Length: 535
Image (tube, rainbow, N blue to C red):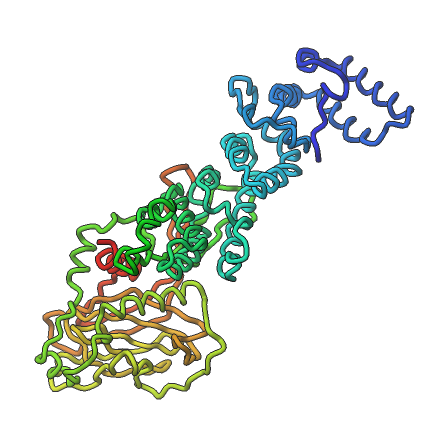
């Protein structure tokens, strides 16, 4: 439905429109009938309906307000080419009844706003979009959701576009993601695009890392510009915000050819070995979807908790993780080969664990691989992990592990210098050699597929990294791994009165005579790369 101007159609001025009474409305209706008799009845029904609405004082004042703002009139009448960018603004003092104004504008905006956004976005005109959206307090909940959905579709399209390597063909279909004004358009709806930006950010970083040896490469520069733009995203998710800002600080210099071109003669040095932190958490719950109420928004689930960035408690826990100082004594105690390669150590497996977690979060599988039947209590990764010992002369180091998940699991033990894994079938139990301060991980699923990166392809779950601590108590130590659960928490937004719903998929593990303290894999991965690649 397009807005039809009373001033343009009937030659009224603002004063006569504002003060029109019943007699004036009757005169307008008679003029409409006269036009119909002359054969000009193409929009007679719409005009009659609009004229009839002038009987309501609030509606009449809403139409006066529209006529007082030509850009708004052009927007809702479909004449977008007539909108002057410098005229887009609102005089709030002229608003008589805001809720009723939103009600009057809603059907017109529903017809025209999406087309206005699409036209300007496709032509790279971001300022008019931003200036209009800064007045979204005049939009009904339905219209605001229309805008949000519009941007979500564009962001998801961009992610797919990058994932399919179409950037090498042409950049302009997704060039908007490199523009800070576009990101500021998203910022008019804080916390609404966390999940989409996380997904898109991971695709951008894949391109960045793939091309980081060729800093003049157009795809590399595009990715760097996108990372810089993402840094201004308005989100209450502190971990996401700091990660985007950190990535931008690394990528910023490569957005300026005059800066990075001077380095090309130095070869592949430490300056180009930049691996950016990837955050992809795709567990998203929509609470209240389809309801007329918009009291609930949705955000991503996963490990983006509202905790301080590298708090003292986290750093202390991180420091308690086993270090990579392999000793002959440790090798003898664990009955392991003293000549084990460095690839078995925790440092390298941080990357492996994070990649495994990323596959679980994204639901990414390599179905082309061959499903491999694993022997019970065997090592599924013999090329990179050792087998967890199931016996020991020291009875105190033996812990009974029960798989109650309803799925197969791979149990990882990251211990001092040497990392190990073991396949435990569904509903099975076994004795494992675990020692104080070991770091444990549970990876669950079905149909283990042998590929370049072997993994489960069905019903996958992955736990946090769990620091194993023994208690000074006698008796058998036990770990029981139950089915993973969806955990939903509600947090009041710091930027609005709305409720953010955070959904995460978490392990459910009970223990006896021992404790398991969780550490975020994302935090550990971030710390690892900050220490190794940002100095």
